[in-house]
Image 1: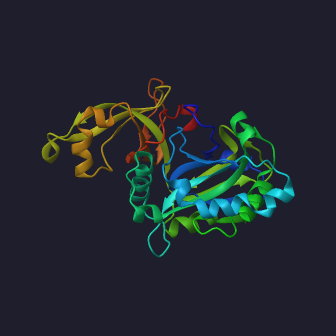
Image 2: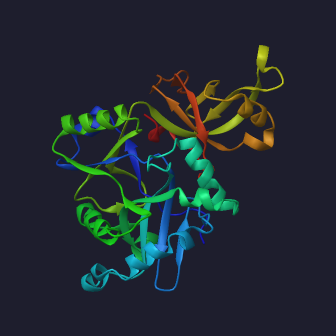
Length: 315
């Protein structure tokens, strides 16, 4: 299994990118979970994280749904490849079916990689899917089949499933409707939306055909230094110094941590060199060629990533 799994990602939205975007477009809830790309063949099912970690026990938990998918007449009638990828995210839900907060949901999902998840925690998981890619094209990194057709196929494949759901989707006719849909979901407590060009291919890159709307921006940076706190935080982590992969963005993050995190992250082996999600308002103008981030806040440890973003990936 390769160390880096192919993955199509969205760019942060900007007015310039929005003006160039093709409408009508597909607008989907931005799933705030952990990426899962599940390879389905006639012999086996392999659920993978974006760094190639197998989610232990997940295929057994989803066995009934996966059998429904593999035996779905849509596949046999369409003569599509029987080895394919279902692309989506894992989200934990409460008993009423509401998504749990990202930190709690991803904490449960992380246990899949370590084989420590409980039966109750496993039962809270739903695999939220939005794409279908034949395995050959997935590993090659490109599939030209239009997204609207791929989404239609996914919808038909998982129609009768109980724990595999299609991502909530709406068609938006212009930039105004796209913004309104994003604000609507943000007001309901969701992270935002991603709009996708309905005629776009699947590609192994951060694609111009997908834009994410969020109340705040985020990026993934590498922790390069730990600073001790002052006052009540003496003997604990006070701030993390983080930077982009090309070292053109550097920022100090001092908020968004619980006291337990500050104790934990004061030990270098627990955080130094790792990738963290950083939430922020905007990227600042460069000083001596180096950018910073305005109002940075710790957004979580990215155990599913080993490479930080670069300047051109950060708004």
